[in-house]
Length: 448
Image (tube, rainbow, N blue to C red):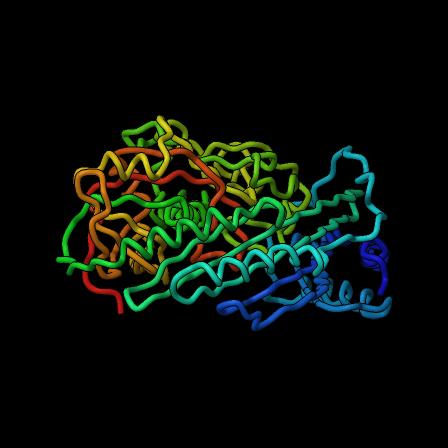
């Protein structure tokens, strides 16, 4: 297989005269293990390569083509030729800006081999899982993986950028006759996975399920664990495109500079954020309302989207920022929510007079994009809290909720920790979130 950096160089060398070309190579090595009880049901070690080429003509039209696998020299040239031809079709997207050009030196490890995840790294994790399965009452099943994605980005304007992104993820579910519970987390390395801690949380929640009560539909004070917060804030973030807002579309139209929360909540992104670091440069494999392949390689800076409760930034490409006279604020690959205080979830439970403690959210879908209204359900356990103690489990329920409107009903913010957005875990959304106490979270019926 041609080394990744050579694929970039050969592709750029095949650029049609006058075209600006950007090439992104994502090489991912992935080791995973799936199990039920004490038995592994699936395991694998996979190496994947995705090559994306974008051509921008002198007229500003764009063509983007991707191919996976071990491309040979001919296939690399053909990929660029196809991108160039696509950019010249009558229906090609237009209005692209010239490619990013600056004086950043080439990445010092530009030509180094891509080093990835080894299946051996999960051996100790597998042993811990087998031990936990023997101790947890009920059936324990789940999934653990280690992945390393190396991204190389090169352009005909001279950029040669590289980033290596490690990720380790565990997703655990335990089931008994009384119900089920879930725990999961996404970190940088399998060595950071706290399996005993996750299993202990499962055991505690299963014990809470020994007593069950019916839930009457209505509005409740709820405690959202970090995973639930992550799912909702991720949806808010991916809806925060400046172009749509300035054209009067979506929930953020006319909201820039307005107060979204009475509490001083801050929602921010930072490539160097502890525990959730991400690509320090923009990688855009497609173009859309709030992303542009011509912006590939833009250096990413810390950005505060909501600052002390006020909406201070939306996602801008260079083109949309120029149109509105705003600062260029590209989307960054992580998300952190912080607020005042910082109690643990257990401490928040202890101070609850009456409310519901959720476990995770599932099947979030748009109902009304103009209000960012979602429908979804809770999953794997809802627990009734009275006078600082969990007294029973209730049925999982369906809800309709807007994460934008929810922000102004936050009563208390806990300590921010690295979290797994369960609904979106296939997309590797790197998040650090707090638990939240929220007023008037409405249960509209039993989850199916």
